[in-house]
Amino acid sequence: MVRLSAIGDIVMASPLVHALRKQYPDARISWLVQPESAELLQDHPELDEVIVWPRKKWAQLFREKRFISLLAEIRRFRQMLREKSFTLALDLQGLLKSGFLVWLSGAVRRVGLGSKEGSQYLMTDVIERGGDAGFIGSEYRYLAEQLELPVDDFQMHIGIGAEAEEKFSALQQLLNKPYAVICPFTTRPQKHWFNDAWVDLVASLKDEFGLQPVMLGGPGDVGAASEIARQCEVINWVGETRLQTAAAIIRDSALLVGVDTGLTHMGHAFGRPTVCLFGSTRPYLKTSTEQSRIIYHALDCSPCKRRPTCEGAYTCMRGIMSEEVIATARPLLLEQNQ
Image (cartoon, rainbow, N blue to C red; front, side, top):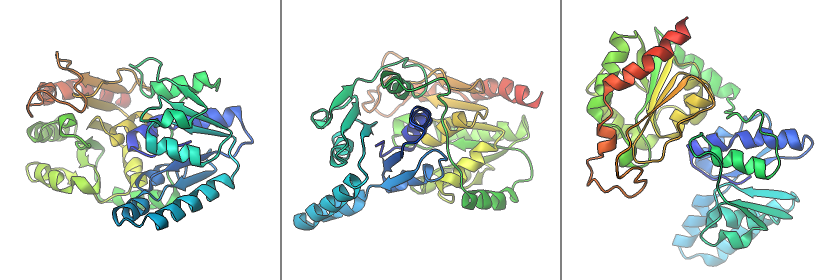
C-alpha cells in the first residue's frame, strides 16, 4: 500500500489494512509512507512492515543537481522493494510520485485509485474514486469493494506503542480534571476557524462543562498556537507531542473540537465525542461513530477547496459561532455521562 501523506488520509485509509488481512490472512502487508507520517503506522497490529520513502534525501540530491547519486539512490530503493516480491501494490494517492513508487516495486498487479498526473500509465489497473462522498473515507471503502475485499468491519485504526503510552501517562499527571482537545490548525488558512472563536469556545468548555481545554498541533503551528494561548486559559501542547502521543491524548479525551485536519479525524477513529468544523473543503457528513457531529455552512461558493474566492474573508468559517459548537457538543457530552 502506498499512501505517503497526509495524516488525515492515512487515518481514513487505515481500514484497508484490516480488509486485506481478512482476505489474505497469510500475506505480508507493507505500507510505504513519508517519514513524517510513519509513526502513525508503526504500531498497527495487522501491518507487517512500514517502508519509509527517503523523500527529503532524494529532493536534496535533485536540488544539488547530483543526478548520478540520485539515480543510484533510486536504484537501491527499487532493489529493496523488488526483493520483497510484491504481488499486489495499491496506489492510494493516485499522484505521479506515489505511482512512480508503486511502479518501482515491480508488483505483478499495480492498482491506482483515481490515478492522474500520468501515474495511470504506470498501473495495470485504475479504479476511479467512488462511493458515498458523504461518508468518511468513502473512496477507500469503494476501492475495497471493487477489489472484493470484506468491508463489514471497515473501521479506522491507529496503533499506539508502549513509548507513546508512557509519555501520555506522564502528561496525564498535569491534568486535574476531564479534558477537551481542540485542534485549530491545518495546512490551508481557508480551513481554519478564527482565534476569537477559539477563545470563546475555550471559556465555554471550562465554564459550562468543567473541561480542561488542551490544544494540539504540529511543530509548524507553534506560533499560531501561542496567539490563541495568550488570550485564554488552555494547556498548549502544540509542537510538544509526537503523533502517537497526540493520538493517546485524543483517545482519552471527553470531547474533541477541530477543523478539517488529521488530528480531528482521529477523534472519529477512537469513537470520541467529536465536533468537526468544515468550510472550504467538501465535508463528510457521516462517520463511523454516533459520537461525531459535523458543522458545515454551505455557501454558493462552497466548497472552494484550494481556490477561495472570498479574498481572505473565509465567510463559511466565520459563520460558525462558538455558541453553535457548544450546542452541538452538549448532547454528545450528556450521552457520554449517562
